[in-house]
Length: 229
Ligand code: DX5
Ligand code: ZN
Image (cartoon, rainbow, N blue to C red; front, side):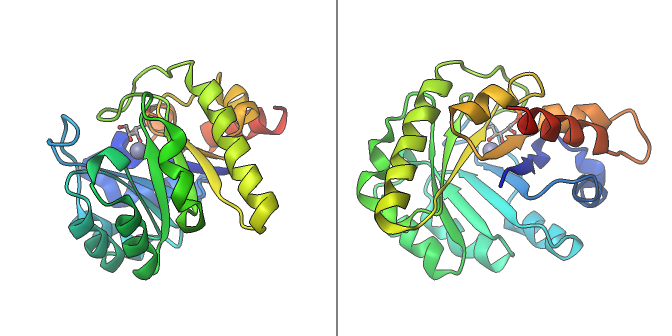
């Protein structure tokens, strides 16, 4: 039931294809794909062309996290490029409901992303269109930041909302956490209600001295922590 989604933001971009293949071979469930535009966040990363390039290399779902403004035009581009899940930030669009519908109509699963200070009420009237909610444990823009502890309380609240929705409708919504997830806090984060874990620096730093890069040990350690949560 737990999903581990390494963020390729911390991978070695000079050997990105190999990094994707190796991390999945090492036990990752999804590939987390961070899209930054130097407008919504103060950093710039990768777009649909790179998604399309890695798509043939793995069967693992590609979890596209859009940190861009405007949002809508890129949704179709990423669906065409092989994304399986697409999430965006409610502050980055005037049309949250339309964005979610566009994602689902393009055949992908849809989610909203909540920054540390973004209230959860953005999900209230669109629960039926959400496949996941993603809570940021850091302010978006960079890998390798420290987890903000108040996110635990917020995760608990998000978990209550999605559990209530599941009781009422039978439909499951995943609760994903992104930013600052490490071996030493993943169990507490799971106890607070997350079931899907993005980890960038924790995973890619751990393998960077092996050649070829392998991530079995760190992913096993994350799962061991989850098993004894
Ligand atoms: C932050 C990104 C995250 C980030 C996670 O803006 O959305 O996915 O890469 O990196 P770590 O796990 O290093 O905090
Ligand atoms: Zn992310």
